[in-house]
Amino acid sequence: MNERTTARHWLAAAAPKAAPAIATSTVLILARIWNANGAEHSVGNAVLMTVLAAAAATAGAFASVGCSGDGVLAGTAFAASGGLALAGVAGYADGLSLPLLLWALATAVAYGLAARYWRTDRRETLAHKRRTAERREEHAHVERVEAIRGRTQIEVAREASTYAAALAEAMTARATLPGYNPAVLEKAGLPELPTT
Image (tube, rainbow, N blue to C red; front, side, top):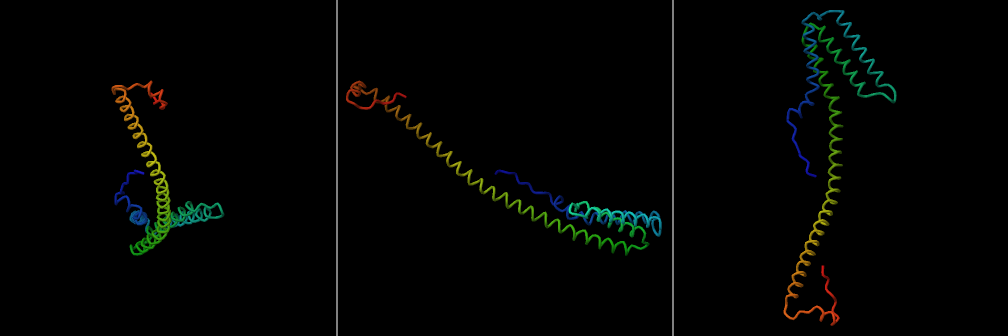
């Protein structure tokens, strides 16, 4: 009921939104470094990246087949395949225009795929908050009823103790009156007062 609410730092909130651009930019930068170190027009390096990209795509296809296919594993394998293909082309090409075009395309695809998961996550988060608020309202009602019942019991106990104190004072005051005799009262048929 009294939960601490903490606001996330703006950088922590923005980091997941920047992840696709950071990932594709990292691949492009590493591929261009690889290009500068001798991968440009290297057939062996191109074959290596082609084989690796094809193997990752095949692994993604096998991971997604069947009713027990793992979507996360398949998505990871296909993303690795795309990253390897981007790195291969960016490393092999001699100009910067084709790698930048592929980088822009890969970044757009990555944001398109990530947006779907962000929407699902936002929907689940809102549904969870809604359910939590409903449960809090239900429990708050029960808590209010119990608080009222507790206050009532405390007030009744307080009134009972006040009444008992007043009764004790009245009995003490009556006992100090001149001519008070409890035996005469008993003979008259009046009920006996409790001593406690």
